[in-house]
Image (cartoon, rainbow, N blue to C red):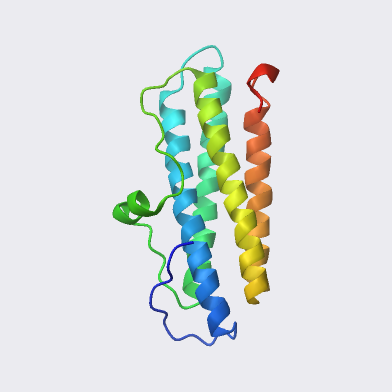
Length: 168
């Protein structure tokens, strides 16, 4: 979990400790989601092969959804009095996802790489649900639950493209 930065005064009555926990969880999830957004765009731009049209369109749909997700996470950080930090240097230093390979092109290679990362983001969101709920911030837990469902659906749709022998 990322260390929460200085908070700003707000009339939001979530307890201070819960705010600190939630800001840290939200920041870490936001960084991972931005990284996943970038990986999905990388796949969208460079996918080749017999499934090009379908995957190109699917990846675009997903990176647009991830853009909205990151905005929701960032706005919740600010609502709690934190500072959302999505600059490139922070992303590179803080992402929990492995670097996305830039030398792959085949559609199924992208699908495998993305499936792994969508699963990681879903897991991190679920861990964040537990942390923020235990800290007493039900609203943040609810936001992360919504995002977890969306990540799981995208993972399902990506995995559906894999042959059974490529499934975990």
